[in-house]
Image 1: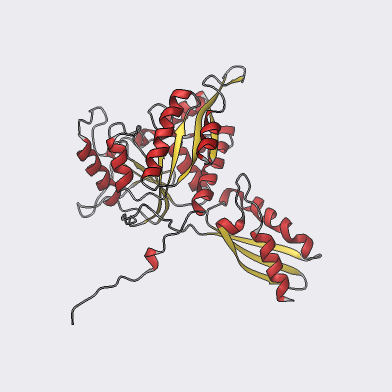
Image 2: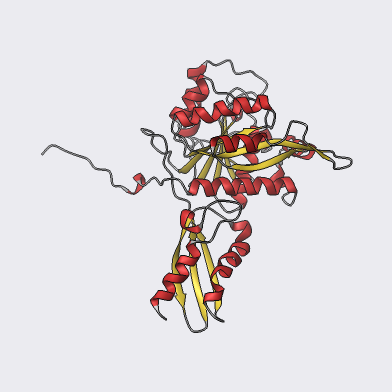
Length: 364
């Protein structure tokens, strides 16, 4: 077979658009090999994000892009996923066992940030990624309750490091595992920052593609300090549609940009209310808030999540929506948003420092 045919097939595949995004395969992956015989064509593609829940869909997508150029040959597509570490803030080193840290943040409390963080983490895991969750909200840790493990504690073999707890396949650590949940945290900022650094760096994370950090709400000194000390590959801002939430969401966006953290997108939570009796959908908090801020800052609106009593109920019961009702509309929205987040991260600059040898200069 003429090698030019292989090049033509490769170019066609590289031009395939990734659904629900503005990128192509060339931006987020590569064609590893093309083998054309008289009867078939075997293609291996590598993506920079996971698609386990939609393998067949993506195989068909790539197959259709080249089938007309292969006459009557059978097209076989194999898709591998490999998540690379991406660049973090200057002067900060990556965390052992973690390829990428993604901060889920909000300018204010009460917008559903913790629920969003948990469901996005679970959605990434359902797609085949290795995922962890760090509950960085020291004053109000929610992840132990959300994942249904609030009465458990992490173990330690050496008294210095600790193993994360596992729930639904997610590695989780939170100050909520180490303190009495009924007692208020009366720590000042430096103590909070120190506690977060210990949770982050003394946890034995096991080969994570993504560590989702549930950030404390707001944009004050604590949040700014955390964003400067935690090596973050990207951030997602959670907001609701009303103007008062959007004002604070803008502050969160500007904070991350000031410390050179890429914004991966916006999640608009409570976008509409769905009546549990008649299923009528109403935008009680306003319309288009998430879209307008995404357009203003030239970033992606990852997904809109409705205000649904089932999401609240499932969260309180320790079975997040992606687990409790994976076929529901809102669970599918979390999955779509998480994949768009992963795709956006895959377009960012890579971190190759781990491939470089350590150079030690000694006097002779």
